[in-house]
Image (cartoon, rainbow, N blue to C red; front, side, top):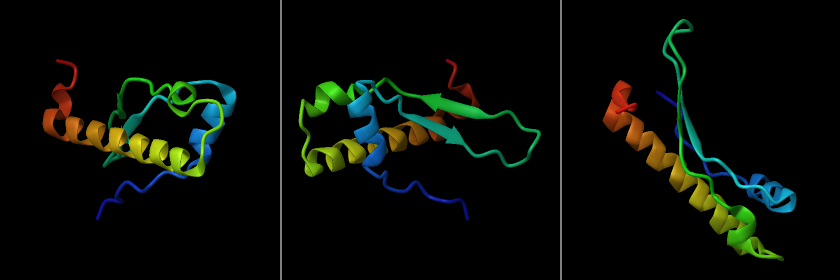
Length: 88
């Protein structure tokens, strides 16, 4: 079976916070054959520094990581519903 999405570690969120940059959620569709086109579905940027404030707690980092995972799941579901017609 296909691997399922797994929970994010809060390290990526912490790095984005320290760098003062947003995270762009995306879902990369696994190709069935090497010669198929790669499909990538991108969401709206999450402004991590604005979300977490100056000194985020571990709970806030975990919640931001969970939000990032939920955004990726939304993108996965969007692609699965639209299929190759995502460009509409």
